[in-house]
Image (cartoon, rainbow, N blue to C red; front, side, top):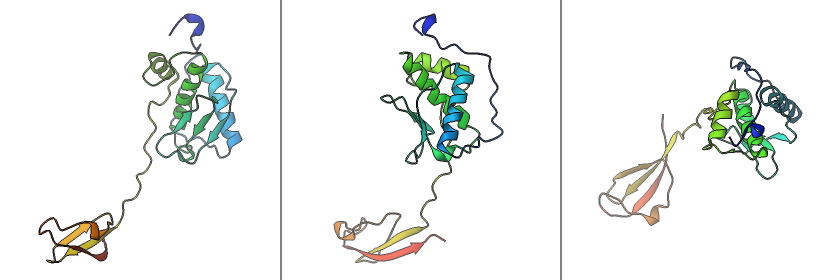
Length: 174
C-alpha cells in the first residue's frame, strides 16, 4: 500500500457466518446488504448501486470500473459463501476508489481480501447436465460413426475407408 493515510482502516474481525445462507430476494435488499457489509467490514460507505445480473453464469459478481456499480449472480445468493462474494467485490470497489491496487494480482487486493475474509473464487454451481443422446452416422461400407454433436455429413468422409457418410438418426444414451 502506498502510505498510511491511503490504507483502508479495518475494525475488529467479525467471524463469517457460513452455516446459514443469506436471504436476499429483491434488489433493495441486496443494496442494503452490500451497504451493511461495507460499513461493518470496511468502515466506509457504499455510495453506488448493487444489482443482480442474470447473464453472469460462472462468476459470483463483478465490479464495474466506469460506474463503480456492483453486479451479482442471482444463483449465488442462496449460498453460504455469498457474503464472501460481496466482500470480494467491495475490496475491488474500495481499493479502486482509493487509487490502490484493486486487481487480483495486486498485493493491496490480496491483503485486504484476507483481512475482511472475502472469497478468492466463486463456488462452482452444479454442472449443466450433459446430453443424453448421440448422433448415428453410417458410411457406404456400413461403419458406425457415433458423435455427441450433429454435423453436416456431406462435408466429411469416413475415417476408416474414405467413403461418403450418411446420417442415420439420433440414438439415446440409456
